[in-house]
Length: 252
Image: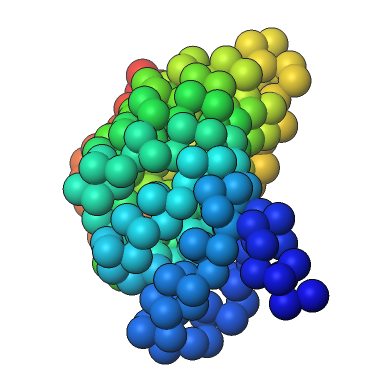
């Protein structure tokens, strides 16, 4: 049994995700250095969290020749190391980089260009993380331009607007499921979605008609002080309303 356990066929799937969230950083590094070589290049699935240095990610890349599924949540890895070793992940079909707030457009573009079989990507953000960028438009653009085979995409609490989602829908024609939960800048028209993308399932947004979207951005419905106060600045309020409508693509 000792010989069998040490053989590569017992280490094609490694899941230390839960344990890695509780261990010390140096313990995680030691565990990766212990387990990954046992796969003998046959590693197909790896689930791990909190990989907090580029050296550890580089070590994973050196054993990723057969890797198809990679979960790497809550990890602190740089764009530069992803760009450097992305060509090691060519067999990847499913990737979860949720809560990796230091990952940016450069890394996502490198992944898209090198991982031609990638069909599922999760890049959800933590809504309580104050370090998250105020806009992820560049990251959405990188996904749209390089990940044309995506069928499932999760972008919960990512800071994007409607324009970015439409760009993704155009660049990822095989998309079947899109999660934009918590993406408050995304407003999609129900009729448009049914006509243009009848097979697409979108989670986390309210599908509404154009008139309903306009009602949502009616300043009197906001309940904001500048709209209901007797001494409100009507000009300032109408200007803010006009900006919101322009963001939606409407002409106020």
